[in-house]
Length: 328
Ligand SMILES: [Zn+2]
Image 1 (cartoon, rainbow, N blue to C red):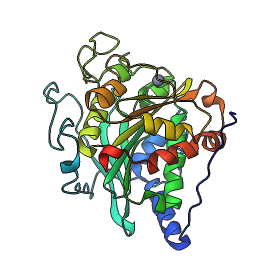
Image 2: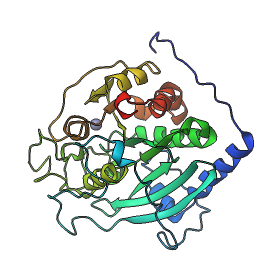
Image 3: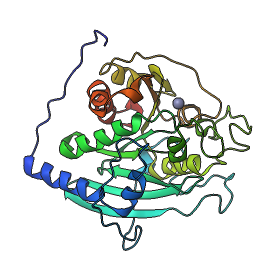
Image 4: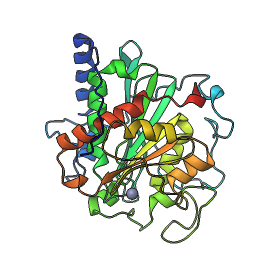
């Protein structure tokens, strides 16, 4: 532990509305898609619900349309909501579609949406959760390196916390990709099932093609799904969880965000430098979206979910509350 002074949030709760939200979250967690993802014992935090009756995931659902006008206030360097990369071949990834539409606000201004945004090389679903309806969009993801999976239970705890304390979501849409490399998590390896480092597979200006980084940008369905989520949601800032470098790294205009998160956890801000074709290089440097790489310590995987949340939960909450000045 550092001697840093931690600050705790005092959140006023509306118990009735909170209970309704929590119930909705529980209902969400019993869908067929969740059951598929949660069936992997390697993926911490996606606790299996054996009682789930499942169902035909994707049927009788509609994806909630995006709010109009959100993109207009964003940087011109960002991809437009309808743009698609020129280097993506048709059929490169399996068709994605909505899994759950729980978009009716549980309380005014707050909704929960679960969507299928792609499949891994081995066919595992890539799920995206959107919580809230605010104009300011925060994207968080975990387990892009399969042997760095401690971030997944943290993001799940964050979602639970925000459902219980929905007032923290005022003005925010939180987009969560809790497991972006499920094949790597399953096999406990850094790479995806084709041996590609997904965090080197993005179309950043410093990209290098190789068998390890992918023969071309977005050659892998997992990185393509992340790319499309960025295109679709246009996040104001991004947090991606890794291990084991024990620091808050950042790319692009994210020093304030990194500092803000560091103030709420034992991890110091440390600029590690941009890696070839990494998410930080692409989103942070090429697109100019503030991007934090939250590097948990090497022993994070051995810590209980409760301990992880105690050490790092406040920093993640801070990332939800943070507003990048250029976005205001
Ligand atoms: Zn990593």
